[in-house]
Length: 348
Image (cartoon, rainbow, N blue to C red):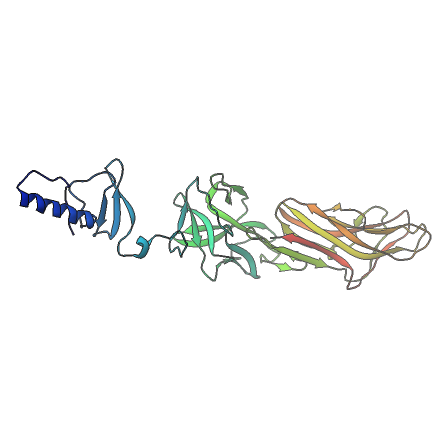
């Protein structure tokens, strides 16, 4: 370890040679020492043995900038060829990530009636703003969980992840979300420290609920198709000549992000009274999506019908159902079998 001011003073030959050797020793050892060199220069290297760090003097020659860690491969820096990042990756407001897949590398899913889990998916990084800086935080291999404690019945909540004193934690809130303009991450409105990861709808028992008849949990990241299906418990009918909901038992309740939902109906209808008008329609939130099964003619034969629509819906809680009506008189009958019913597909 050697340091030098790199100023060779005039002296006798032997003294000059000794001074030169000392300067060269300081140069090849990167001015190593527990204290900084007494004389410094812009862009000078210093092996700080006290901190175990390689440092370089800044251009103004008034501070040291740490480059990396001494005695570590590649100075403990991530090579261009890639490697394992053991700490958090901080993202500045002008940062651009070029990666496949893009973060967040997670999926929020139903685990049980009382637990949902944010799990790693195609990686393990999720963007979280901590201490005023955006970081890609690592999810534990088993994910992090959300319990139903304190939740109200029949309520829609957004789910956010945040840093709680160094631990990634989930919270629910009725407060909606917005886009952080500095980096494009979806956050809780008014609070950039909360990153949106999902949405839940509790049932009447204040629990999470995911069944073919009820899609009550969605993920914001890495959305996948979620299917719902329902059928009548028995043959149903109505004498109404205007479209009405046949029976609420056919409903499929579902959450949706602000995007398209595919709703399909398959069934048979008939009316024994002339002019035998019999009609059925898939429906979302009371709005019919067009006639699927129907006829008005010279006999009371059953009419098969299948079809539906892809419909844009608002973000939140919805239901799909079947409406029907007779033509000008009589009773329209919708028949019950395992093959006939209502289905839909959302993403989340």
